[in-house]
Image 1 (cartoon, rainbow, N blue to C red):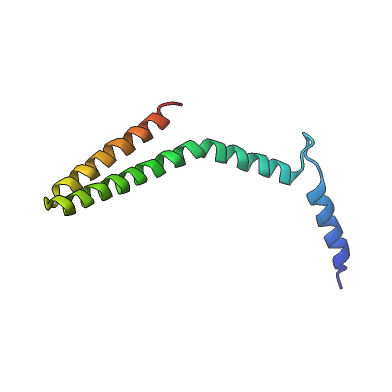
Image 2 (cartoon, helix red, strand yellow; image 1 turned 120 degrees about the horizontal axis):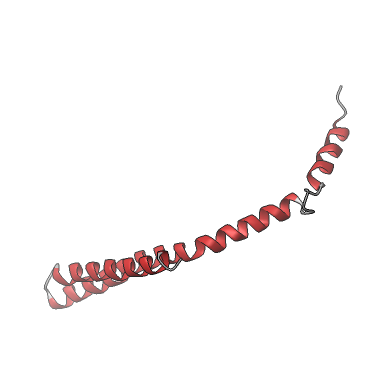
Length: 97
């Protein structure tokens, strides 16, 4: 029968070993994750701005249509303006790099 304590000790020592540059595996993984989040953050924000601008300006257009009885013109204008604002923000972030 295999002694599991020896196997566990070997696995524990292996995961606790430092790499060539002196960092533990979890430290490297956390650092890599933080770098990826920092790089992806502006892109995620721009995509949320695109979605938010379309929803908010489309909602304002819908409300104005209900108030003025001019359906669907303010809604279409709000959606178009939301697309323009959202894509402007997206392009600004992408081409900033």
